[in-house]
Image (cartoon, rainbow, N blue to C red; front, side):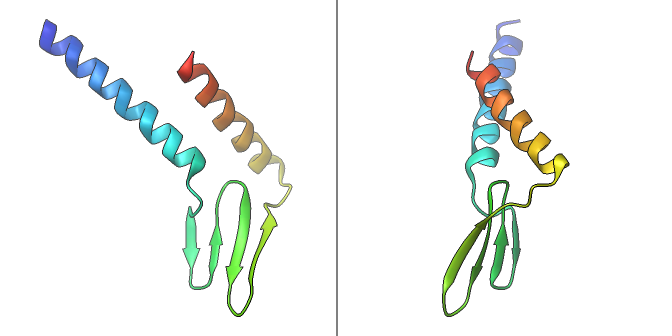
Length: 75
């Protein structure tokens, strides 16, 4: 029983770490000189330029749910 409880705790800590990493990481999509993530789109060529992510409704919903999931996971 103790081993099962320890396994559940390790699984929850692992999920929490992966949640933080997936929210913070800056390269979800890499295509040559173009990188995109949850917060901004960047291009790197002669000049490195980052623009805010598009204002699609689904993307704003994903951003809100990621932030809420981090907050509720910490609580």
